[in-house]
Image (cartoon, rainbow, N blue to C red; front, side, top):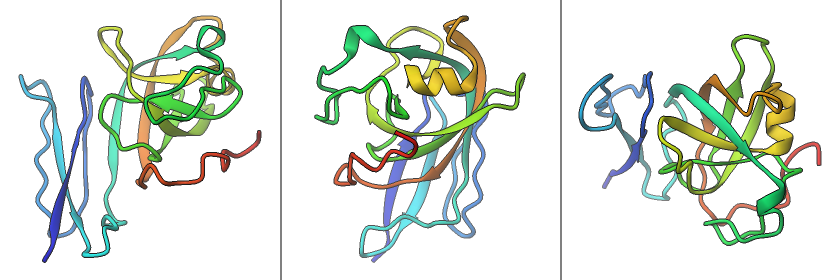
Length: 161
């Protein structure tokens, strides 16, 4: 039996997917947020061929949250490459790119947010530094999900820490 796994992309301006025969429902400028349905195997692994892209305003958070528990239960570390997203599963890795500078970084979702209106992602201070958005605070960035995994993933596996 094939299960369907649902990802809701909130406040995204672009959502595209390529899943072979899996059903895809994606829309721009709809009252309902775009929805992507992915095939999952009996073992729970999602189809590796899917591509989920979204773009929008990204902000960062840092010192005021250092050491506090994230929604995933792990302590926030402003020096790790992590992010907050409203609906992506914890452990999901997202490639975030600044189209103005070409700078990019892969972050791991470990928290919920952003809670500010019209933002699609909050990143840690280190991720913001690598993206060149520390001084401005927010920027319009493009994002692509590169892997989806569960919350049981090793939290100490962030690169370059």
